[in-house]
Amino acid sequence: MTDLTWINGALTSARPQAVAALLRYFRDLDTAEEAFQNACLRALKSWPQNGPPRDPTAWLIMVARNTAIDEVRRRRKQEALPDEEHISDDGDAESDMADRLDSDHYRDDVLRLLFICCHPDLPASQQIALALRIVSGLSVKQIARAFLVGESAMEQRITRAKARIAKADVPFETPGAVERSERLAAVAAMVYLVFNEGYSASGPTAPDREPLCDEAIRLARLLLRLFQTEPEIMGLTALLLLQHARAPARFDSQGEIILLEDQDRTLWKRAFITEGLALIDKAVRHRRPGPYQVQAAIAALHARAAKPADTDWGGIDRLYATLEQMQPSPVVTLNRAVAVSKVRGPADALAMIEPLAAKLSGYFYFFGLKGGLLLQLGRNQEARVAFNQAIALAHTPAEAAHIRMHIDRLIAETEAKQKGPVASRA
Amino acid sequence: MLYAILCYHSEDVVCSWPKEKDEQIMRQLTEVNEKLAKAGRLGPVARLLPTTAATTLRENAREEKLVIDGPFAETKEQLLGFFVIECVDLDEAVDTAKQLMQANDGATYEIRPIGYFMPGVKIT
Image 1 (cartoon, chains in turn purple, brown):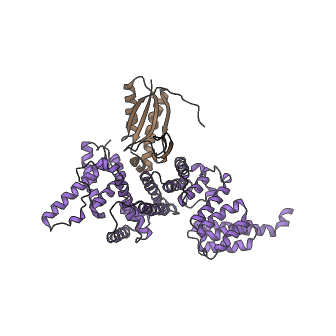
Image 2 (tube, rainbow over the protein chains, first blue to last red):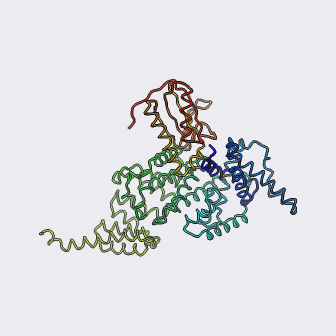
Image 3 (cartoon, rainbow over the protein chains, first blue to last red):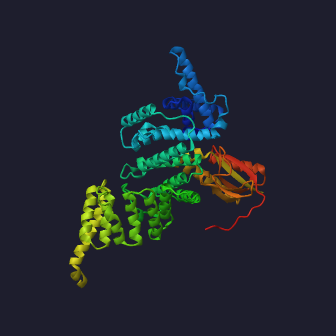
């Protein structure tokens, strides 16, 4: 019961809640983190001897607060009087922690901690790094590996981010309803970024980045447990689960991406799909659609298809049309065009993406899809031009190789046509 | 006598397990289950999805049926799953729960005698 893996698990799962509560108390991120670290060290000493506490999180918060206060008192003897403003008198240490943790307080605490990480002053890469360090408790080394940068560079990035939010004024009073929902939206976007950071990786380093997807799912579940009735948080969690369910089928032995159509669907993680479908079903009942729910519903239609031919492309087309209205973006339209090509044919799809040419002139997938559609229409010469443009914009050798395969097929077909009569006689 | 052995744990903790740990626990539990199955004592076993996937139907004071998101009760530990096991008496049920506990330490087990049981059909 008190073996090291159990304790580690308890410390990891207590972290968001505990650091969030300590942040409200100390109003300083470094102090809160340090206090939590000290409490963890004490737990490692005390729990194996005395058995685990009934409520590990409450224990950690209590011990962290007491040791930090002792530290302040000790320093007070050596230095000038500390700044009393740094310690809030919001509740006293003797009060029943367990009760307070169940209150809304705790919900706002965790939301605040997450919200601090996605402060608008911080670039996305810093937001993600900060959330992984502070909320998830990943080590700087782990985060650096996931971002493919050196440890010291990541250390610097996190330190800079912390310095920036220390200057920014984060309100500590309980947020109002509007502010709470704004915070929730910002935090949801940040969780989605964490996921994408892991999901968009390919090549030999992809496995190093996969933990980011797991971490994002953990954060999404944490948010969902705090806001059980928010359909968009259900949608976000469902979206991440449904996409990550494909993880075991997404890469070949070289670590290169396998397209959705070519994936071995028996490798998809059933448990994630079941949970994702259950969540999207729950969300839809609220009749308050949002972008995460729509994206999750699209992922759900893919997940429900046992083989690519079973895919409900009509449904996907309609969902993308809804998403276009919610979040107009050329990339969304481009995705919709894929569904349109399946439902109404390549000519309609091509007509749909041609107006996007100016906006997506630097986008690999635009030219990849355009080439594919032209090819289906038998406009091989134009298809080849589009494919060449795609190759020029490819980010990875695998992307380029995939397009080159199309071109090779084109060349082979053209040659076959030229030799057509000969071949038929043979 | 049939007993339901209900397994409770903190979802925060369980959802934080790395994949290897989760797989290891499932392996250990399967070992216990296989022994019970061999002895002809094992009924249905289920692992539930997190309570975040749960929906609760309840009636308010005006007898309106309300669909509520989330589990029936907000508790520190959540119902993770259950086993239905044939045991001659409570002692054996406690002993069996202890074996399950060894396979999944940190979880809490509630032992409930079953009053009515229908195995149901094989669900495909």
